[in-house]
Length: 81
Image (cartoon, rainbow, N blue to C red; front, side):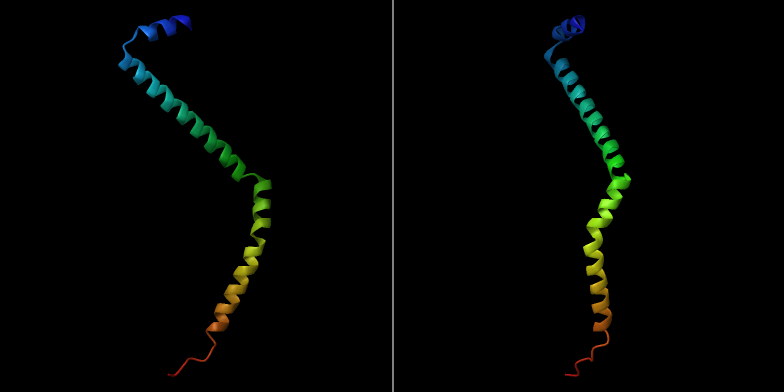
């Protein structure tokens, strides 16, 4: 490790900045990949699906209510003015 650091210190500043950018980009890619993998496992878990269904129940009632009202709105008499 010390030899790598000595070689790096001996490089011109432009080269060290390029290495810094490459390492930063590689670290960001690794973090994004870990995030995507963990997110996909979280989303596809059975517990998440059950919690999502439970959270969406009030909205399904609202949807049924809206669909029922829109079909009854079609049967209202039209204004002839």
